Length: 210
Image 1: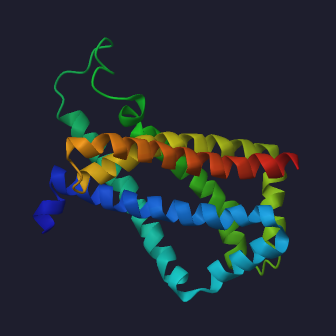
Image 2: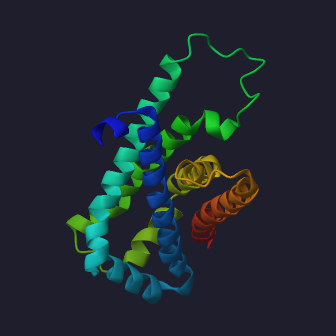
């Protein structure tokens, strides 16, 4: 088993599994954040539920480990792929058989990681180290900051681009390889990526200008 996960195929499969886990988390997180539009009571109740539910509390460290494992595996795969290419691609054929998203997954991934670190510092640590009574006020206050709001929007643009390739790649890697399903997977991935990215972006923009 350890030999399988140390192989290129094993790493890609593990990368796909952790990616699908994060895809599910993003959807749940977006649904929770959308309660901001229903006012302080609704969002604070959601935040209280997320902060006290035992299942979610168990999932939080698993999510953190999954995210770290996803990044590390992605970096290893990228380094392995680069080392296996004795001749660099020329400018004329760089995009011949790949999209911009697929060629820059490591870049978009690191951009998302940088934002996540900022988000943890500005939101997750305060609610864990101090008694925050009004989560709504904290979040809306962050969005009122133009620098934070701008970084937030930019991060979710990168996330959308990352998901455009990652969603369909994960499903294909985990077993859905038939050609007849590929168009459907690509369409579903595009829709999911746009919904998630635009959903988070709309929250930031709305509360920044509200």
